[in-house]
Image 1: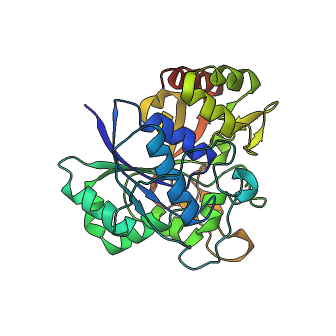
Image 2: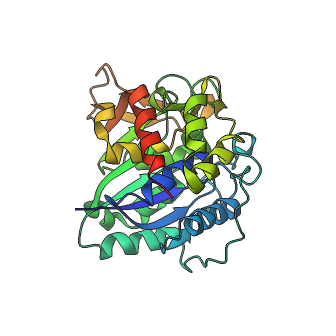
Image 3: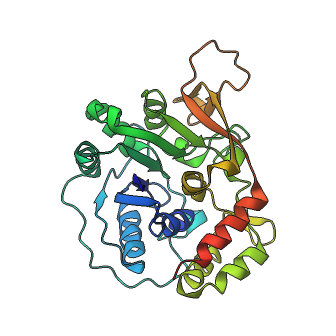
Length: 303
């Protein structure tokens, strides 16, 4: 039985790797993509998502979400992903038409129309998801799980504590984490160990058309380097759906700081000291070598 999912994304090179697997695995039924401002601005993230769907010839609807965070000024990560978000590979110009309605409305409709519960996968800032859960709380009972790449319990990548996706829109992250829906979170403490090293990337280059595309993107990605390994953060969410035994999770209480110099910082009660109810499964470990092997094997299946 396939698992019905919606992916909220801000492509982004590691997003592209996650989408490559999700769009082509028979165990996953991708109902739609929604885009959000994150790694680059909304125009670029939407165009990038369209181009990835075109590359794999997938007839999957796509809807644009929010151009800016809920309350704070938007800051992108183009220094990591390049100006367009997918620098390095020359995708053809896409003629694909996005849905007319805002992504939040499109997600609400897909979820409520589904006969089965839907899994949401969030691999960008959580702006769209916060709006969805606040505006349409009736969707909560139809959400099987919300899987998030965001946060960190071991230092940040925007400052000493905050991870990018939560830092971009800390208020949205806090709304989502306190929403009451089943949550599984992959933070930098785990995703920074989800690396592809030089020998892995050179193998991927040989995997036909898709391998060549991914290699070109990885060659322009500044999320690590070929020697130490490229950190493919967002891909952890999709690997978890398909190979969950590669991760160790801890059910704990989590929340997000929303103001001051700590804004965007994930606070996790890993020692069970806060006397607050647990509200999320938080990834605390990864079988890193097995992750790389699994990802290479999966990429080798793509055409």
